[in-house]
Amino acid sequence: EAQVTQNPRYLITVTGKKLTVTCSQNMNHEYMSWYRQDPGLGLRQIYYSMNVEVTDKGDVPEGYKVSRKEKRNFPLILESPSPNQTSLYFCASSLVGTGVIDTQYFGPGTRLTVL
Amino acid sequence: GQQLNQSPQSMFIQEGEDVSMNCTSSSIFNTWLWYKQDPGEGPVLLIALYKAGELTSNGRLTAQFGITRKDSFLNISASIPSDVGIYFCAGQLGNTPLVFGKGTRLSVIA
Image 1 (cartoon, rainbow over the protein chains, first blue to last red):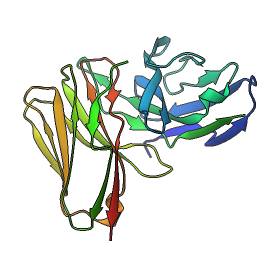
Image 2 (cartoon, one colour):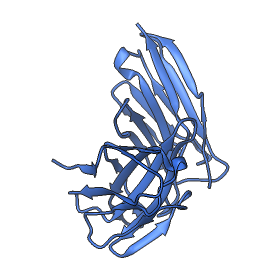
Image 3 (cartoon, rainbow over the protein chains, first blue to last red):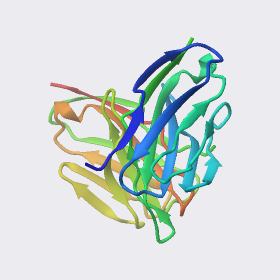
Image 4 (cartoon, rainbow over the protein chains, first blue to last red):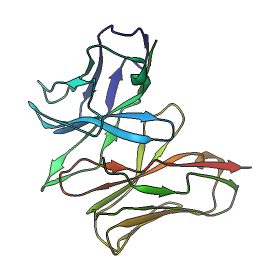
């Protein structure tokens, strides 16, 4: 089954404790992206990657890191989480074809609480 | 970052009624997408539009790509309780990242 998976689905942590949220897709998509969703703000892009070893900042990259060593995986790293990073996080992936990013498929979400 | 203006923010409608929501942008896009998000889930693509003026249907859903390339609307006909959720529009120009609207929260009263 074609899907985007994220782990963990729920995480409660404390300020300053490094964490990683994993994202994996099995559709051989070049493009992967991370979003955060907050009430009243919709979806805001954190980072995206057009292909392996190519990553770029989105709208709200501060406090986050990503890596793209393999095509299928795109982990989101919070080196020193803070309470304002409490949010619902979504990973998404899509094909890149004929110069246009195809429709994005979203993972199920990771709800992060930083105390 | 750039934002789309999506309206209305929320809607309460009776089952069986038609629904209309729209998105506008100050800049042009060459792709418009409409997603639905159920509680506790990630957004799921409903309709994708790739050409100005394009009108596309998916069951009871119809979406149009505005002729100016700066707007799009989504209509839902004869709403049912399972239409409840948050609907997001998203626009894209070339390979630039998707820009999302803030969502329309739809509630259906049986």
